[in-house]
Length: 230
Image (cartoon, rainbow, N blue to C red; front, side):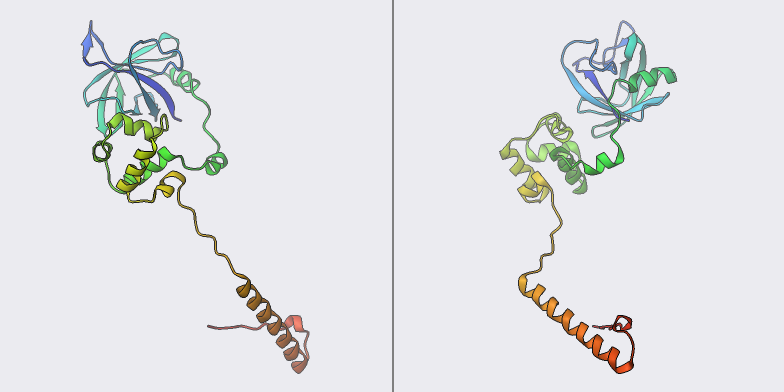
């Protein structure tokens, strides 16, 4: 399950009065801190830690204060980082009850058939194509002349790139602009009228030959099978 969270953005990070200055809220809409913040996607929430995806400038070893529903808190630290993905480890294990409270803050996961029916968004397509071509977030953002947070917001779908940037992204990823916007679709095989007419003629000829063969050998025409090898 993915849980949406918020993290405060501070120029000074570390500890203040013995507590981490960077706070990550899992309280849902009732985030208890003020000031500038950045969105966070939380996955794999467990008793020991969780995975985060965010454009916030986190680093390995950085301390965090995690804010849970109903005023519960827990100190944690970043133990691994790669692009916009971070692993966070809690100082003390969470209870199952706390994990359940966090999960209740998010809508239920879509069913498999709903996921299959949902088309790929522009942001998801940019992210997929970027990864397929071996671009990291920082590298690709620099390549197309935008900031890392801007690219991250495009890929998450919180904002959309302008038309001129769509053209730049499509060129950088090596795909037509139309394909970037709408995705590629398999070509539908169409038969023209002459092909269909030829097929009808061939079918009628084969049917008449089956009747001739059946009369010749004295069997029902439905028992005759004609195999054509090419």
